[in-house]
Image 1 (cartoon, rainbow, N blue to C red):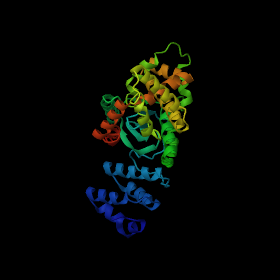
Image 2: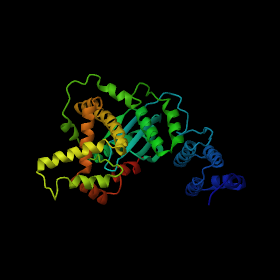
Image 3: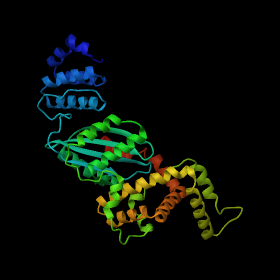
Image 4: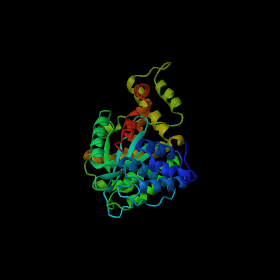
Length: 364
């Protein structure tokens, strides 16, 4: 059953006040199915007459989701910690991002302080090519949330997925970038922009161009082979149009009827990949890898892996080194061994299970 404004006039309000907590929760559950300004008005009225802390939190969360969908909801005039209250004082804000899993998904987290010990946390699963796959927000206790986050970081690290702190503004940039790719969640992004403008996060990295400033003096750097052996790259698996056909041709190099020595076979395969990378259909791959490397430089800088972060910046500033990294990742993705491991892993583990485990266990 769904309640409307007319239903409120016919006695829903009186019924709500006369009901116990369980029935009130049932009424709120029914109202949650409607996404209209009428329901927003009903929730505001219920909020002003509710005293139970758990039900107040439920109503605030419902109002928050209506607001992020562009509905006008007046500010609640009730004591408590409403999600949508205006942040008058400057509050802290933090961002976090994970490296990619083997399906090119990652988690982006944005944390805004609403009041003492209360956070508004926004979690997104984004895909390198598709943009935002899932996004949700809610309130969380400060100590509970950060304790949970530390546990998740340790758990994901076992699968070579890193979660690093980044600036709140850059986390928002990543969400907005992914929103453009998925052509959705615009209202959510605009709301978060307004909220972040009240935070203390003013002198932070805001876009990829500022990542290059982390190491103005590149100095000595580690080798490319050492860089590519870092665990942050272990899950990175490239996907592109015509990949299956390219892999079949790649694997046939040096086989019958003319069997080549191993060193010549490897040389021919490298030549094949160099020709492949120049094809127009791989132009998007180049842009994608550039963005991945920029984000990974920021992650490794945040984690204190400065030689690796510096090496990525050096590669991004040197076209030849950048192409060597691109060729390495293409060869890795074309490799039959790596491909079979990737496909086996997909059969054993459901798509982005690791990252969804972060997403679904948020301590709201």
